[in-house]
Image (cartoon, rainbow, N blue to C red; front, side, top):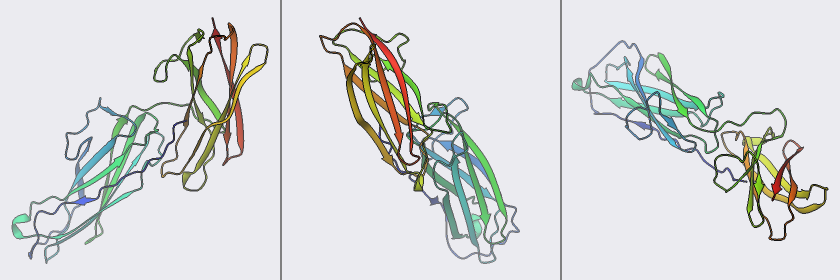
Length: 285
């Protein structure tokens, strides 16, 4: 089972071009504009066909216009940025970006740029992700907001209200992307089985406690192998991990008899006190 321990990083940057005494005063008609989602800081915007992968960093920026400047040339803005996955769940805490500066007369066309950075969760569903951003002019309390989006090429594991094992299937190798339609092996082969556990409950701070046992039996029901707690997943994170990937491998011995064998996977949810078992068969020729 792959352990999901990840942290989200936030970058708060406010850029001021100049500071000093001034005598500027504008009424304020606050706007947010020029929002850009990119894979690099100050990079080119992602196109409509671009998709990022789980675990990748996203850089976001937008400009402020129509803000108020006090008689003394002061500017005071507060911005927020937060990203949500395709299911509407926040993937990182809300960034707060503060801009407080003074402008000279020659800076009257200056537009503040607000920046944020976050990470797509390493285990994340595919789909369109949304970035919500807002801005408040602290001098006159005007507000403005907007939404941007980007696409993630993640995975899709069917949700469940209770503990469930999804996508239980056999593979030829550990990294093979497509499951075997007819799982047939020979003596000496390595059998790979992968699956996803979902529908478990969350504790405080999205804590999860998932483990699984594995057993192998002959067609007649005689158990050949069993291992309790073959893997465990205990973690906490801001983002509620939607599923836990699991894998198991078995090397067929030279004296393995031809026939059909059954693998049983039992997943246990320590937080929700749930247990579920799924079985799958492979053949040895």
